[in-house]
Length: 531
Image (cartoon, rainbow, N blue to C red; front, side):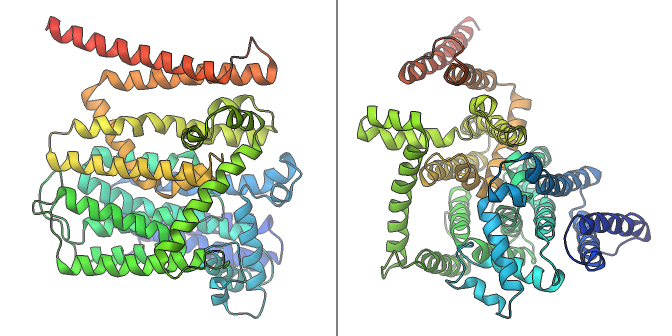
């Protein structure tokens, strides 16, 4: 696919202008930064154009890709410049970082890049900022050869935005082929505009890389020939290049986060099983999956065992011990970090604490708290947008069970219900693993956000076609929760009205939910009798 001369008329000037601006606000020699930034931008624009022509989806996909890239780049630059001025006085804010992990990883990447040590040391025990080493090695590589004279964090933020945008064509083509064009467009917009994804894509974090590798893997999977299913078409899918992209995506995941590669293989295995006429796999497919699974398992085990805490001989034993300790530690952290949670823990029975942590994690970041809890304006905006995005997505994930059950195709029904089950399993795991933390918990959820975006697209199209009244009833339940919880937070911080005991507030919310669902069910039953 060749570029047209007209493409150069906007690519080159835009790359030069953005490169000049980014170099101006970064330390070091301006000319060195200008050349590096401009070259990276020009090559990224070239890749964007090539990928869009390959996708053959028209201007709409170009707009989605442009929004994906621009939002992440400008948010990243804005936070890098704004946090030192309008943020808190801690080290992360003063350096322009939202995430502590990103700040530590960036410092260690620059330290490794500016030393005489080989880049492969990123995978050793000497560096604790990156559990698996892949992103740290890439960051150090960029610094060593693209920014040798000065530490320029915006260069890595630029790469995060580029990588996030490159996943869009793969994602759209895969979803469009399996679920149809309507779901493809709806899912692509959700994939591009979800606030948590934008924030992570505007930082030096693993998630933008994982989401793009997931999109490549999905595209490769649906075009690899292992499927007997295109639910809308019921025809076998085959593409000689599909397996190449499947391999590239899985390899990228293994380098950045082997756990995600393992989770993806489980999703694909269930997908094949629940949608196959015979319920069988070829020996080649089984062999490939087994090799990647075993390699990923050992890489994950080795990374968890770096500190020497899990001195076990079996990889499964290491992972099991880590999960147990992680859940206990994060529940303890939640209890210690919040006064009202600590009081609730003391009052509630032991068996109820873990379910409480799980539900509290699902609700994070809590939208009423983002509106009321005291903080500086820039952080209030960050908290609010993250929470608003999650609370907009949550009803669609809940309704994905209903949307899946309403499919006329048995294969499509099985597929959607399988993806729904796995998505909710991951959401619950994230809640347990992060102990209800308002930062780690949403970030862990976003690791498998691609599948949530697909389900959101399915529900959007299902609701538009069916006009199910249950969509508005689920929304009403969420509004009832938000109103009651907002009053509880307002009375806690500003003493507006009497503050309800926490147990009474929960009972009130459940009472409202029962009334909404019960009245809806009664109305539907009455209507059926009248008809």
